[in-house]
Image (cartoon, rainbow, N blue to C red):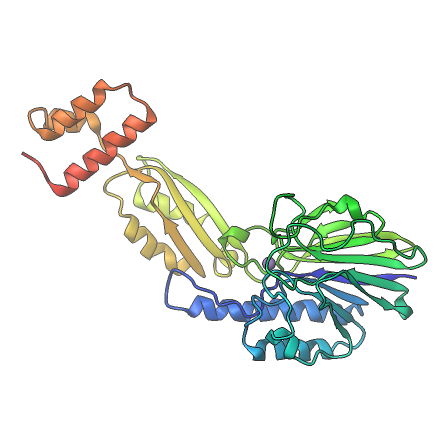
Length: 363
Ligand SMILES: [Mn+2]
């Protein structure tokens, strides 16, 4: 008996987004992006008549999100004509009978695990049993059930867990996937970067990246189990990606050279869609204004941050020394140059000089 599934999780619906620039328009758009991606997942399930939609925790950002958001999610699930939805609660949307999560009437095609123990639901028409565990408290230093789970070899068996498969010393439910090798597929949630831990155990990651910490591809895992053989693949689905770039500046670069090279980081189509954070490194000609670079680059991106904290102004030490031989600046340079020139002394010299020159403590 074949069964098809979409594995998602960590959607964090209802999250409030805060951005560093331009009021909160990005926050509002981000909320819409999250809904769009969620609907895209449901449309994919509907269009391909997928049997199971597995949500491995953190469907919602917290157990206190706007009730409208939860009701909308429930209503959209109810419109699926074939797909059965199985949800386990994660550390963010931890289940309790008092949480909003628990107050909503979930449609018949939705199974929500609620007990904090290992539970399962059996779908006779699919000959498939889905096991899972919902979070009902804020920390788990160990699994709340024995490691060996006896499964029925006559049917397909899927396990859903929200926890940390990378660390044993964690409050976020340590998981060793080798404990569950008798399952046809282990659908994991909690880590937002998609990754296969084995052919049959994977983190789907958050379908829409949620911050600059979540760059790279984001999507869902689409798979099929047939006679205990699971074939699945990661399918990118996110609307906007986070792009975190480092850009090396040299003192020879003019304002326009830097501007053009940063613009060349991506196509115009991508620039007007994604989030970009460019960190400048190296040494810049003192005549180049980084503030103007920010202003002139901003309109060529949907979202653009320029971080110049690591950028140093390139000072001509020899010339400064020549022109200031008899004053405080010259003395400071001479003192510093007595030290062995390491990157640290060089930095100290530059910082010191920048400070002196800015304050105009010129005698
Ligand atoms: Mn999460």
